[in-house]
Amino acid sequence: MVSKETVKENEYNLNITRYVDSTDDPEKWDIRATMFGGIPVSEVDAFEKYWEAFPGLRDALFKEVSAGYLQPRTKDIKGTIDSFESVEAYRVTFTKAFVGFYETLKEDLIDGILDVSAEQEKEKITEDIFGRIDRVKLADRYVAYQVFAKYWDIISADIEMLQTEGFQVITQVDPNMVIKKNNKDDDDDEVTEVQDGWKGHILPFELVQEILMPDEIEAIRVLEERLSEIAEEYMEIIDSLDEDEKQGSFLNDSNDAFVSKELKSACDEILQEVESDEINALNKYMSLSKKEALTFMKSCSDADWNHIEKNKDGSCKKPSLTSRIQQLKMEFEFPEESLDGKLLSALRLMDEESSVKKDMKQKKENLHIKTKEVIEGLSEEEALKIVEQKWIAPLVKDLEDISSAIIIDVIGKMEYLAEKYATTMHDLQNENISIKNSLSSLIGSLTANGSDKEGLQEFKLMLGGQV
Image (cartoon, rainbow, N blue to C red):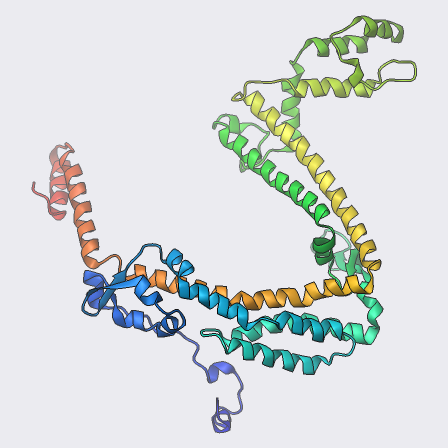
């Protein structure tokens, strides 16, 4: 606590850095340990707060190797700490400290949503959190309050809207207005506010979708995953090309992506030469008069005419014929390692990518509209359950996760301490000698004449070798 006199001496400057030194103490190194190894007992004892919180952990991690020095008992520091009995007990203690907290918040914030006093409730929840945190060793009030404050800003803003605008706004959906430039000219600062979809007044679209429309979300996730796979497959094809093949115009200047127009052009040339009995039959059909074509259809078994769309008179539609020919050509199997095969594989991926993107865009648009309709149609009970998941569930989860963060911090510090003196100066010296000997031996195996020989001999002497 800073006294009023100190603040006065600093001319009432309330900058925290004037009164609190947040810099870390310089790290200390033990000279003996750097030479011979071992961890000074004093450096292990510096974490006394951890050993008090996790009884028995110190002895499970370290053993004495000489007077005043320890060494790790295990290479698996993380595994040992994670599974240690007192660490497991600590997790249980932390969880128990927050038993009933979720229910208290639900009763105060959800059940009494229109009557709650935001300021009084903030103070009440803060004291409740502090009381629970104080029961657990290593837990920091400030850390817990930071978690609470992050969510309270959201909670209090929602409470104010519900109490001032009316409870009905809980299912209200508003136009999502965004600022867009009138044209793409960077020098043009003129902007316009336009609608870009919808957003929940209280209920976030993403949360509603997560809770009420998981199947739609999963369908979109699958498509997004496929797009990622396609990108990886593109790169696999590019990496498989040799340097000469990479000079083709179908790759961009940095050789990390295909150029759509050039790839399609290259593939068109490749496919010009592709023939099969069915392709030849379809091409012949297109060269005949309508009467001849109908007769040809009846006698020709090389083509699967069921794949072709028909006109009312039974003749084949030309676009359908052209599409079928292209399909057959694209299905032609080229040698997998040939350039033609690789380029056609890339083109197939490009076609699939376009289809997946189109499908995903449509699904997202449909989901967006459906979400708007779902929110507007929610009952009071359904809406409050979503508010509960917006306000309370993530707050409680993040508070409970503090224990995991504490344990991760312990693991990090112990792993660092275990490695700090693992490599001694003697180890480095021996490694240096080994490198010198290897290099000296290598030099000894070289042959040279004149001044080069003289230079190699001097280099070997520098490394400590015999000439």
